[in-house]
Length: 315
Image 1 (cartoon, rainbow, N blue to C red):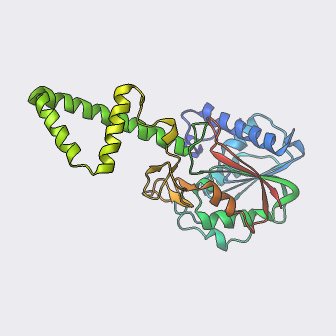
Image 2 (image 1 turned 90 degrees about the horizontal axis):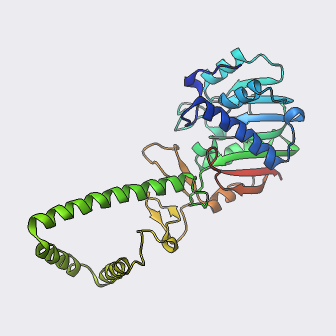
């Protein structure tokens, strides 16, 4: 058994079992989308490898021809090199700059090779890597990886797409759910405060205040307020976000919008650059131009373990 210290178990999981289960699920996902029945005849390059996939492969005695893990964290690579003594496993550190987790590294655009020599791989996968890349590094990574894939090989990587999805588990879905819950909490607090003021000052005061506020609105806003009140009173409006007006994306200011097109690129958490960069679906696809890859599919997030993810083949 490969005992991984808690400090080297990356990604947000509330238990070791959940963390390890996600590794098995990701392996299964890649095999399913790349048409692989067994890894016993496949060479895999895992960029941003962390420790969980290695533990899943080693502890589960999953046959694999070759597994090469690359990571920006030297502690991860030191641990794996020290504790995994198998001839078909290989690990390398790479010092690449990233504003989120390695601001002092070498710019990805200035790196022209990976520390794997002339090796070519049947599968290249990256999870929680493109989810922390800006557009320039997104393109640079695609170009860098192209030389390491076999002609019939497959590339799979996850990223954040700026859209609500039917799965309800994408990063934008979760942020929207949080915003709705926050709004509901605020509405409840506001309702309690109004009830307190009405009890203290009387309904005549409340009616006068309400009439004064409505009178201060411009004509278009007043008409919209009147319509919302009418729909609420008639039971037509059960919540504040009917299906036909649900926001579809996050704009540059971090607000949800239901009209227009999403920005090409926006930081969901601008106070922490590249913690959650969002790409529009169109822009994420457009950035493939000239990188040598052909997109097979852009898939929706799946519960528990992955955000949007691309499946690609060499062009």
